[in-house]
Image 1 (cartoon, rainbow, N blue to C red):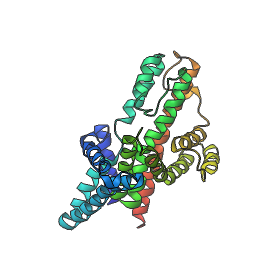
Image 2: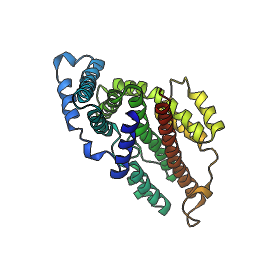
Image 3: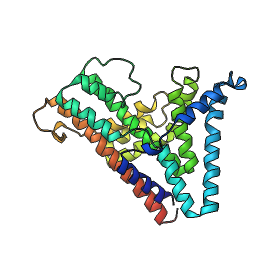
Image 4: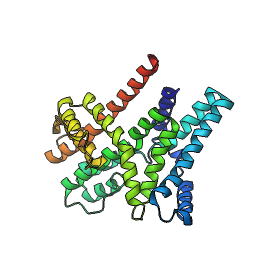
Length: 292
């Protein structure tokens, strides 16, 4: 059933571009504010996080059990797809990256920077030039792809819908807690949730990309506790895309060589992510086929 839920969810994402029809987060923001306003929660950031996230996760687990008991496999399928769609990241990733690449190839730095905003939500400083902008977008796009899809699928396959919802609500909590007293606790908790899936994703990059370069980076980052998830992903991708060159760019010679190389790097990122997703689905299919 997990395979069917994943395939149907991915098909709907391809149809809609994202899970936007079920992405309504206002309830969670109101719930977070209500919990934060309770006197008993004022002195403990960890307790505020747990009280905000865990009840919804428990409710999802109960809902999935009831759906299976009352409606059988159909209930599991319908509610599983809806909840997994909700757990996926917000926005159309391919559209955001395409908008940035079009502006980049035109040499329109101002428009490229505007298009980069949703890809790099933590961008707190103006880039010094095109190269710095590209580096920020490369790191931001890699993390966004991981956070919106791969981390969600990892926890779904490991713990089912409650696991996927645990990750999504933790990510929403960390986003809403920026510049508040809860930011440090929320960021550390999210880092812990991302620690294992990002290393699994890095190993899949090695399989579908440049194995030698990516595996070396994977080993260096395997037990690292200093780098954040985006930095670890960047190291993996630089190894996996080590053999890329400007000739792999989809545009012709009307743009400068440096622009073509940077564009080819992002296009290579898109291709690598697609191959990694195919690998994950294939492994899941084989696990189902052989009864694991």
